[in-house]
Length: 368
Ligand code: G6P
Image 1 (tube, helix red, strand yellow):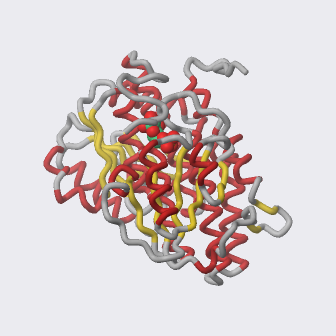
Image 2: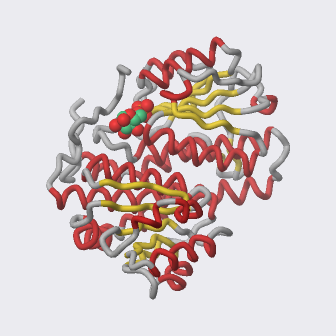
């Protein structure tokens, strides 16, 4: 069937605005509302027994995987090795027998990710796909699949596939933590309860569209370079924000771990380099706030995404500060994906680039 743009100017905008719906769809397939618990489909291996996890993907999917690593280590207490498929397949990766290898892919056809899956199968790993295209090669060749129910994604720059990948990884984290006996029922109910709020909170975030467009037009369109900073699970979001911006607006952007800024990018900061700071109120907030101070002290223009509490703390320092809904820090990375998508989108639209089909990029990289 023909897929339309649903009244939006671009597929990318339509797909950004579909996120409250598809996040909810993906979650509902695994969430039991009466028990406030997560149930995964039956897996052909014992999830509780995996000694170690290897997380492999390319592009935006790899950044969902990096959030997954932080979650799985913190809440399920299992070691996670994270890898780009193009590096993994040509290294000599060492993996524990009976380990779990997770492959994240929207298309399920990315050549490097598929090659990594085949390598892992030969090396005694249980292979789990997190895939959006159910008929794809990765979905068929994996031992098991946890589907993202994002629906067809047409815009080359991935948006709703990313946030639904995060939903699946969050559910996997809870399920694995429970299976390993390291998460009590109360924590499971709290975290899965926080997950059920994400669709409505995401819809609230999308109400900031006009505000984010104004920031894009004023501060980003004229920029040559942009820096994105975050800590903890906001670090992969900083990487994803920078990736989105360069993919569709062709502005050079770098994502950096906020604490690593003083080891390099701080040298670039002046009044011409906007600095996007992803800083939900969480135990790392104060550390990120001191990085904002360092940016501003060097004439840098910080654009802060936080919640009301964080915005109150940083408003006077920042060029602009957008208050998103306050949420449990566990689900913040899902929510904070949306403003960075909108920022990239509006910058690209204002610059007049081909948003849905950016130059030199392909939706699925099926050759090396
Ligand atoms: C291409 C797309 C990206 C995507 C990446 C991985 O580079 O342009 O949006 O993140 O491939 O694709 P996959 O289908 O494996 O998620």
